[in-house]
Length: 473
Length: 90
Image (cartoon, rainbow over all chains, first blue to last red; front, side):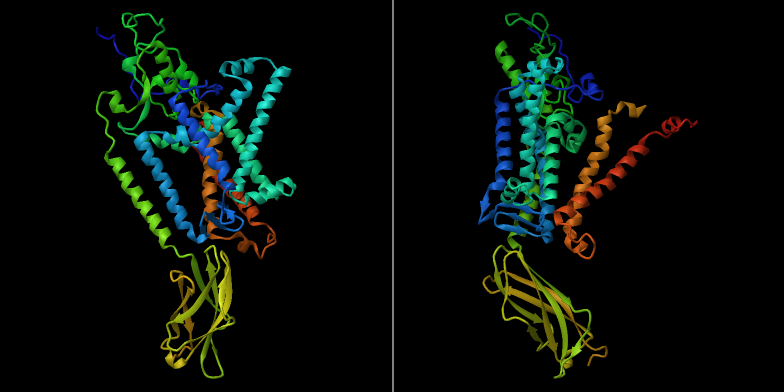
């Protein structure tokens, strides 16, 4: 039997009235609770990501907090590595890798990031769960909100906001715990001795969490997120998207399970609007791909349940590609994916190579600017320098100091051995003496070198100038 | 007018949010290059902790970037519209 006339809804359709209405006064969205395969993946994502977020600052590594971006000390500890401001290069490469990974996954699988991993989605999910736990399901929430204020409503709303604030406060506390040692932070809080700036940032981050996840929710995605605006540029016809199958679904309409809907000229969409009710951004996926869609797949789960109840095949709303919807083959490997892959692999190699070659040692030499040079009693020329050894390693090292550039140069220092504790900087003066006969120019390049006595890879060099009289020889 | 279609929240976001992001980046770059402790050591703010300097620095930069966003939003309004608002003929 021939199918009834199909209403094809183009995937890049213009925003319909539902979307337009978001530009008017915002109406609160009450996403219905949803269960299913993708809801399970989302839950796994939430648990894993929040587990990492709240757990990581408590994880210890060789007697220290394993991940500590110690802003007050200007050192970033990441397990066995210590990064200094001088290591900004790695941070920059890391950010580029993060951005490119986002492009890569977007080209491949659409807005995976938004639906499963974005902090905004993850915390909003938790706040929604808290709301559901205290206020009840979607219908109860809507009834409560329209009901006049009563003792019960104050109690329920008060309880919800209290739990939200407590959860947000712990989130803010954990956030600051990444930047100042979290054990010290706990002690200071319990002793009411928290510094003003830590207090400020805990409150600031807590309020941001409470506001973004409790109140703003999908508006963050719609109005604030830059990625949501430009992600479409990374899409092509082979990108995984969530799409309603209009060829199967239209014409939509209500019917009894026993009805022969085909005879009535209907498609498989029973127009139950469940896909709209579960949507956290309040769109109708049947209107085509919209930029508000964060690809959380809640509509896929709920529609599959409806299809199951109706004994229709699943997948009326499903993960698919635009090519597949139009009946063309989809391609996984395509130029844009390959380019992203190659560039990403290149950057990962660069980062890995850089880290493996990184020498956690720096040497700085500054010539004493007060006197250009001095003649000693035995007729030598003397220059004074201040040396700075930065031991960026986590343990102490003893160093040997040498200098080259002028023949038979004497190096004098005010200490026998040079030992710098882990993560510290040592400054000390050195005196260089050279025979004026050996100098050809007024200013001669010399090179200081420090090398660790216990580790042959720890070598740092620094160039400096040795000054003599204007006339030279 | 074009502006009347844009909800208030979007206009507020357009001023506060991009400036927040860029202020964050600028603060990180600035304080990576310059240690506030050394910058302030000879000033009356020498006792300010690094965390304090970062915080104040961030908000000062945010103020600056937000002013820039505010002016952008202001100049985006059609000139004729502004003139009418001021009671003048365009």
